[in-house]
Figure 1 (cartoon, rainbow over the protein chains, first blue to last red):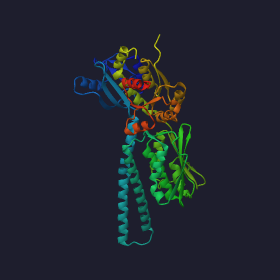
Figure 2: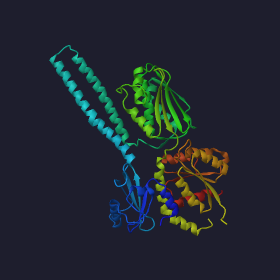
Figure 3: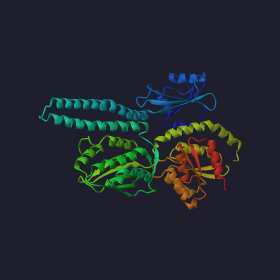
Figure 4: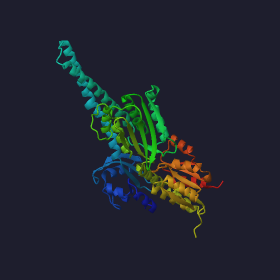
Length: 370
Length: 128
């Protein structure tokens, strides 16, 4: 029989948790387990895939803890990819089963992996074939010596545009591949001054070359800690500075500032000198959610991906223009830790308690004066 | 009549389930358990109620996480007797180093055993 306090704890978890007796009876199931599986407390377990695993453990074919993934189709309409852990109960011959929904995690992992693959197969390779064809056509024209008509120039221009597009696509594929091994939604503890230090370091080629100067404002140890993907944030902020420095008419003077706004921290990079060509601004605004239309050819896709990652971390990105000569990127991130980890920790903690609870109770009973 | 509490502990965690488990473990050993759910609210509780030990989670939503709250407690000379035990699911060397830098007296890695929790609290709770 499960301890009443332990039951209260398990009842509150979003992971599914059930206890199966050695006889095959479901002796306890929390609300999530009852929602996910066709089971009834007090009745025999009739979930075939789970029965077979438990039976294999009982016969000694498998050794707990047993971990596997499964797609549940019975009772849940969506988000049905689960990681299952089967454990032996520390007391008696019961089995404890934990099911965690990993659908969202799988989606993001697959999105990045698939993006890399699709971009390469569907775009980069055909584009390379296209470029080869264009070059061959140009060579034929040269060989035939057909002058005039502007045809040669048109094809050459087409080849040049195709070339830059192919480079861009390669960059996107590389980006997606590099980040496929790291979680898009991360919970690294980030001290803002250390983050900014990394960003400045990442722009060292621009600094050394005298292309930019950087001033800091409000960057100090009293700022709240943020949790997220440090590598991506450094990429976002320094990438933006590189992007802008390459396009400014004149040297760039950047001001990086940070301030707390309620439960968010606002990081901004403002350029306060140098004129930004209107065409650059036109390109950037739609990519970052601005109102202006424009084409995307020159920007690359990294900023939209980073924007999405920041949004997944509960943050937001926006860009400000003032008459086409001043631009500022703002990244707002929630301060403090994301709450998505708490259920995982709570389940692990509850199981750890279940293991030692009887010993603790006995010890407390034997030492009343402690 | 129940025996009086011999020690006062503040548990700071945004998970009510974990606070409940800690309470369950310690109260039956005559340890009074106070609760707070954010770094900021823990500072008020420590200053007003003067617990001997603070059990502090690291990752909490809000403008102050557990390590920042720990540092604030340790930097306050009026709270020099207060011991801080950091509780966290993050157990890498860099995390332990950060906890030490914040002045933590002990580091409990989640999931921790109730026996380990009780032993640690008893040990740190002994008046020097």
